Image (cartoon, rainbow, N blue to C red):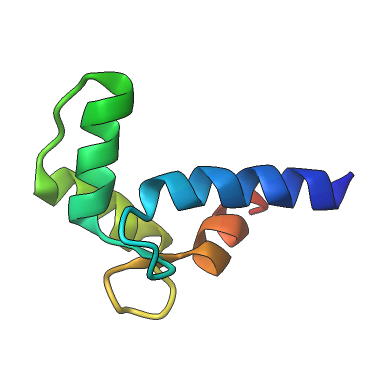
Length: 72
């Protein structure tokens, strides 16, 4: 069951990782929110969310950081 949940989470993460580099930036997050939700957030708001999940200080969100937040 955990593998199914992790696979689903990875698919969600990959949707936000537009360039496929394994990291979600504030710009990528902002674009996907606009596309999926039809709402606009500022890059600063997107960066604030990324920073809240970022554990290594690179100002990007890796899948591991995303997964840890989902399981926290």
